[in-house]
Length: 130
Image: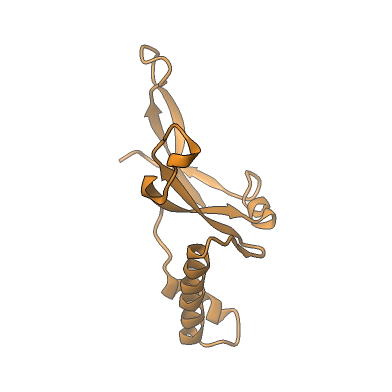
């Protein structure tokens, strides 16, 4: 069950217009690597500590591959890729690494994962705004 609450938002293109209300997801908690390792170990014959070690190793290697400029594709999960923001310059010759001011990780879910979360598969309930 996914909790949602009403949130008021203004129209950035028409500040004089009345605010409208939209549904916003309310998180009900977090799942960390230890919890994931526990869940995986209970669904397999692998011990929890081994699952945790494998997941940590996976994370380490994903970051290393991203630092090499590679797209990391994990079948059935999705693809990770580095994205950057940079300052603008007038000519191609002026472009350099010094212009980069932010690095982020972009994630694109695999088609199968994306299709597993759709309006027909998620139940919603409305909660009161805090």
